Length: 385
Image (cartoon, rainbow, N blue to C red; front, side, top):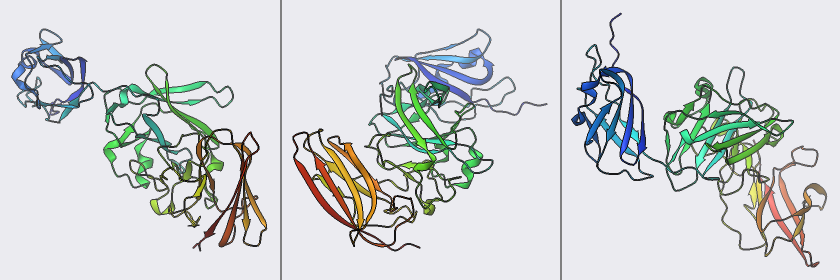
């Protein structure tokens, strides 16, 4: 059984602002590991000292530098092929990255997409998005679920034992099995993290929780199968996507079924239903005057955004057809925040789809002083396939 496997680095992590701990895949002669000229950090240089973990053979080495490393910067370490194992196999030459990253704070990283009802033989996945302007480390993040009876956190798993850096505006997908992702288009396969332990997310309903290493909640989303759009006859293999990064995970109408044209899921890239609406300049505004709830990912729902002068308003919103016949109640006597969003998916009260044509959105809002605002907005449901 000849050894033809080249040694490689399993892990590189900073132990302080001047030192980097390197873990190799196998033992190497310590005197080789301690040749500091075999290491070079791009834009920093060679270490002033290299200390192997053991006197004769070791799979670890501590690199000490005169220059301190900056927090939030990713550094690249180049390693010489002159580092060889006991059978003369040269170092494999993979680029190695390390750095001291910022700890994620609340909603720096958000839950962006979840597949909780996979096709037969498939696996759940959860996609996250870095909405901060900082580089974050996935080894600082844990994913969990909640007990459906008690609400207690359970099945808490560290996303990665090694550092994986998430750049601003980047997407990563967590799953227990990448095979199920093969039926979807994956734009960045390198951004898929296969976890040895992964929470169980029931098909009917459940809760996804992101935590830091001190059990502080970063983001949380409670889903249910009823959140899928009316055009979804079979939810198996269809993910729920976040509509807007700047809206809360818990906000009504901020989740939608992935579009059929996108293959019913968009792991590692922009959601098919993503829609960001700038702050409205009036109390209530529609995202569009037309929409077509046919599941193609384009204007599948109507967004009703609002901005109020204070947070003491209560609203009623109803839908009528052009003949004044009642179609559906969107909300009744619901307390408004200063700003927010409601949605209409093009269905009646009984969840049946309405015919194409014009519809009237009647809005009534009143404050604690009895001041009443009334609005009539018109939209059109366009033809569907």
